[in-house]
Length: 413
Image (cartoon, rainbow, N blue to C red; front, side, top):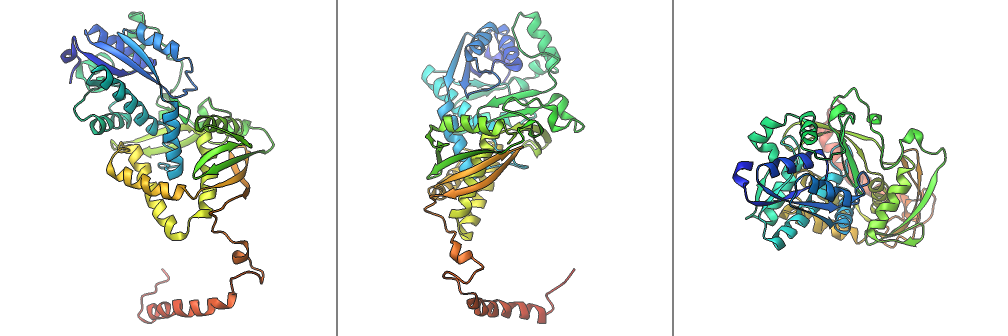
């Protein structure tokens, strides 16, 4: 689909108020397209004034600009990521990926109410976001159409990169915050920040090339351990330092605690994009790291080895499903249903220490589903485990081991 085919039509555009969004909106308006900008409030720490975003989108030529609150929705989906321990290659908590589904779903709901059937976004042709936006749209609203400027030959001819976009905005009187001076781009929500492109495309630039927005680098964190207490009930963090919290508050408080101690800051990942190329990103995900590691510590107590095997298969599946655009399909539904069974057993109070980028276990109490038994695990002569019982077990296991050896199937190489 090309912009010239949209003249006189109304489209919904996922507008962030950034350089790409403003450029695309002004360019489409110049083509005679009626743009309704929809910005989702995801607690963006890099752009908290969403009224200013709305004004920028209007100034860029949007016929109407809406701000839709998605914080509760994002917190709910972020918790699902934690419960699945759904980290993509190298430890990325899928913070941007999961937010794309929240954004798409809320925009589609608003489009349905307004009778708009064409959705647009500023994701490029090299990235994963175009897949997430479009596949989610195809699954949730199969009769809707997607218009993507970065796949429009006319748009690509006009804009070769950010320098041309800045020049275009300046020439058209469009206010943008982006300048040539900023060395990389950032995508943010309260689950995490993704830094990429620009100077970060060079592997000679270290992860500390990024100026953290969620906290401080580990080397700049305090020289003492900060202890926090988190209470989980049925897989949900319900208290932080003894005080009841909503899910959104749990993330915000975890971000503050972990961020000021350098936890989950400047995480460097070179990952395999779904479109087939390698990409390099530097991530900030302090709250996800703190809440996620705490969750994993309780999970270790609750799952036996068979449950753990099933859980890890679901975890790998969901990490890839989120990253690749298939969060809403039957495979994800089935994996989430299995993860929910395990989450119901994650209950307990954890003491965790945060220190220069590390999360340190300091104790667990009130864990009713814990399978760990001090007496059974003890090396002392106590409890229900009789060491001599292992004699029979090892004799049985040894039978197959000897047969393998006698048939020449053991090789030291």
